[in-house]
Every structure is written in structure tokens, then in C-alpha cells.
Amino acid sequence: MEKGYVHIITGDGPGKTTSAFGIAARALGRGLRVCVIQFLKKKISGEILFFRKCSKNIVIKQFGTASFVRKAIVGPEDIKLANRGLDYAKKQVMSGKFDIVILDEINVALYFGLLKVDDVISLINLRAKNVELILTGRNAPQELFDYADYFIKIEALKHPFVRGETARKGIEF
Image (tube, rainbow, N blue to C red; front, top):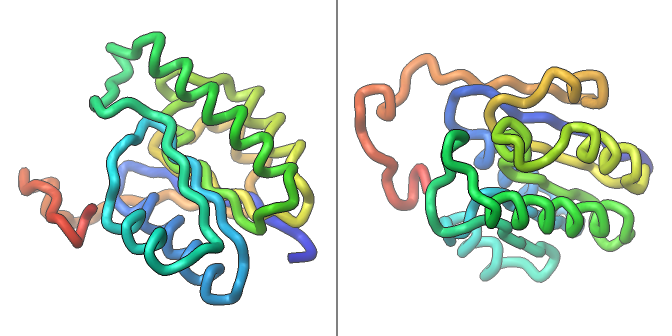
């Protein structure tokens, strides 16, 4: 790509990661190379299984613990893994190896205080200019708005989660 854009996909509705993986699928179909870096996650979802089977042009790395992280109970291991993920991301956005880099749930890592907004802004500015950068997760900080070419807020107007139904294998994960 001649010029890469910055996407921020945020909001309280479900589908932020799904949207980013949809862009990844489209890119892979066109022969582009994709790197997905997941913060706060260490579970193998359906999309990860699919992409690992179907394409050699995608790298997926996870930087999280197996436990669910809440803002009130962030531990030192969560902070260490988030910063390790950010360091890895900085290398990838400058490496020239990838056309698209997805930072999945990085907004949540920022909201929880695991990372600093200034460090993410630095990453945005350091990236090779042809790299498309996608940041997902709830509670994207307002400071990132000016750096985004796309700022998408996902809202669920109606969803089974609201009725207390759980996620279904193969549909929501």
C-alpha cells in the first residue's frame, strides 16, 4: 500500500475484534500480510484457528494471561505482558514485514492503565507510512481521536448478551 491509515474501533457493542478480523480476511484475500497482536487475551478463538489453517501471510501473537482481567484487579503480570506486547508491536509496525497491524484490545489495556497513551501515540507516529494500523477495544481514549483516519464506535441496539445469554462457540468466539 502506498499510504496506511489508522483505524480505531471502539464502543460498548460486540464486534470490534470481529470487524478487525474481517479487514484481515479481506487483506489476506488480496495477498497482503497481516500481524495481529492481542492484548489481555490468551485463548484460541475460532478466528485464530481459521486464519492459522488458511494463510501463511498472517502472524497472531497474544500478550495476556488465561484469566479475565478487570480494571480493579490489574496485576504486575498484566502490566508486564501489555508492555511486552507494545514493544513487539513497535517492532512490527516499523519492520516492513506487514501491510496491516492489528492491536486487538489495546484500548482496554490503555483504559486499565497497563499502557500509557503517549506510548501508543509514539507507536502510531513511528509506523512505516504504508502500514495500516487498527486499534480495537472499548473505551478508546479521546487523545487518540486526532490520530485516527477512521474512528468507529460500535453500539449494540439489540443483542442476546443484553438478555443474559452467553457467547456461542462458532458465532461469538
